[in-house]
Image (cartoon, rainbow, N blue to C red; front, side, top):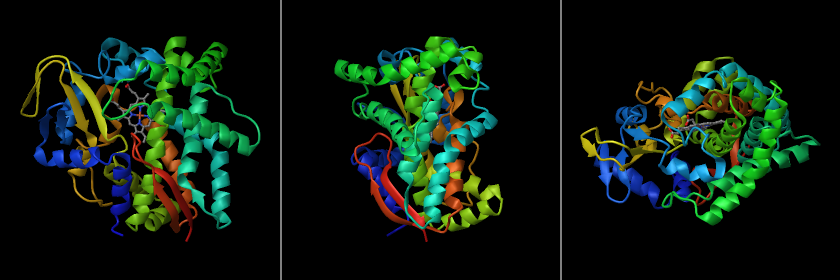
Length: 393
Ligand code: HEM
């Protein structure tokens, strides 16, 4: 099978109609107005202009991001703009330092990852999807203030349940319908009620060694902490669960996994960093970012009117740079575009990177690896594998 064929299957399983249409739109120019959809941006430099021009293009306050407001409240960053957003981001500027993200991942994920290493060491297969969901669920649990105890199997089940709650909430959103019905709002509220109560409890305790206590220490009110915890749940679980297994698969399918793993074991961080950015470019884990125009403006050569929806196709922007190539340098306009740009740039980026490094590091210790089973997930918002089993080659 061609190296890219598996990745194409993952995309098509998630979006059998939208994926081909979006890729076709890439051929229509850097900026295209599509009736019924909005103004689609296919070029990285233009995308960056849109995402940094917060006077013209808004993320919250009447946009699709507001679909979460009735469920989680108004303070979850993605549904905020202007001075309120700036003030909350300023409070959180030092929240996820790379050092804190590294410590958090180490404290929460070392034990589950040690079990993964042990399984691989015995020559047994490991499902990278399940592993990633356990790791992401464990981190989300820590971030929302949910303490998990008990034997390993019970802890894994609790972490998988947490990740499953994010899946259930994100699963309510379909590409063609960016609104929640009253019934869906009630469903989602039922899921988050328990999590919100946990966050409030942790906020009241205020222990600075916990993530929620740290939010309080950084000046967040209880409502803001609850909003942020919910943002972590929906922004930080499915994205990682989609990215990490695909990253392993792409490296494997292009014959690069063994070489990158060898560099990692030799203590050379360069090839791993290049592998993560180039693989993420190809995968584009967050394939679109939405904005609404609030005043007249221009995107590239296209005029926009207030009320126009802008669809930044990070996928098309990233793919414009060509085929997978680990030697490729990413120009400044492209850098991490799949994590956003400007004031809404992914707050969890350092944590996402620490997670990716921790899981890859564990797998790399047992390379060469071969993929023994895989299956793409169908009908999901974030393209993903349902199962990706690897074993020592
Ligand atoms: C592969 C992993 C991830 C990807 C691709 C990703 C992507 C993104 C993107 C594209 C945005 C900007 C959205 C916009 O401009 O409208 C964003 C924002 C955000 N992300 Fe991530 N993210 C990832 C992981 C995480 C993690 C692990 C967390 C935390 C646990 C997180 C928390 C957030 C938050 C709170 C925001 C909102 C920031 C704001 O609006 O100011 N993300 N992410």
